[in-house]
Image 1: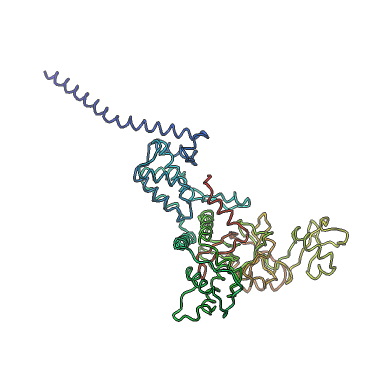
Image 2 (image 1 turned 180 degrees about the horizontal axis):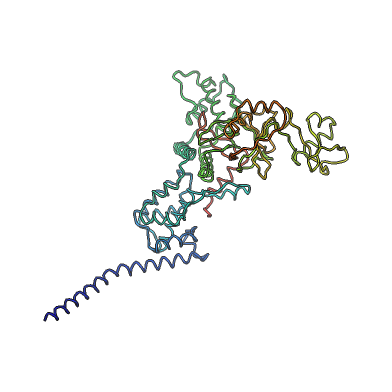
Length: 541
């Protein structure tokens, strides 16, 4: 009997264990079916006709199979995850991005439980939306070298396989946390985002009125457009209603000051005259300014994540130069950049040498188009400009220019150091394939102009000796007096920097926080329009 009961007990234990195993494996069987269906759908992404689900294009055809392999092909889009994704997509416009790029309509339907596709397709679309959003926030939507083949800035580097943090966020439900992690926090970018919010609010309230055309308006004159001008400047804050108002249609000092402030921030001559140029900028609509801000947010995603604590930064569109040392902006000055047909390229290279009292070997294009014709027409031109003719080895030669044409002239011109030298007293070399560098200029009167596009592509610095003293003082401990002494001696001297200093030649048409307020710069090279068009086009990774 004892043996029987022991056998019965073992039988019941065996049955119970089998039942437990059976019950525990039922959900596993269901889950395995979902996993199999999801894996089959992901496998289809390898085929061109499998990368579209209804009207939805799947961008992550290579990445998503890797992601779900790390997730063991388990579905991860819980209602909480979908809600977090939907909220993030709705707010993507705050970074100047387009919610439509992230399947916004589908995600909204999925959040409401109204997705019309099967479970596997739903997973793929939601994950594609999530990865698209992370990608654009981190790298930007547009490939910069697709707009500019000269682009040579380093792309932001990922320190780990992106599958790892994305899979972890999906499993833990930390969707919002990962999005916050990849969103750029650099101060300029944050200020641009705030500016986008501000101008979006302007547009939501109807923007600002257009000031009608008319003759140039000068201080003290009367004009029926005055009321509209005040209203226009009141929207963006340049004009505030004074405690005591004067004659309503008179261009009074308070309004003149407001116009001058506006002009200065837009890169216009701050003369207080309401001429056609100022009128055109006043009437740029809020929607256009929003697009301009979005373009510069995209540039921020390209550049600001990799920017180090030390650099010389040139803003070509804003005509200024900043020096950053040890994470602090230590100096700003005005610059002159290339004309529209000799554009200053956008690139970065390290500064390695400062040359005091430089000579100038004239580029071939300037030789053919400018110096040779002038020298041929005027026998005294070369001596007056302190030029000499050199051969391919750099040795001075004596030649008869009349034997040649500009196209057949086999020599070069070199301008000796001195006050007449086109490079002035200092040049800063950061070797690059464009032969562009920073330098002084004898044409100092041009720095007083607002639109400073006068060079052949190089960048002229308003106070180059000050720039030299900052750089050589930091890198070599030189006092300004030593630099001035070398310059006064008139002999060319090259100083190698023991630690190179990055030079970033950039193109920013919006400056959200200069000394006197927000500045919108003229798009001198027409780069904004191409970038805005690319931002508004469908996303192509």
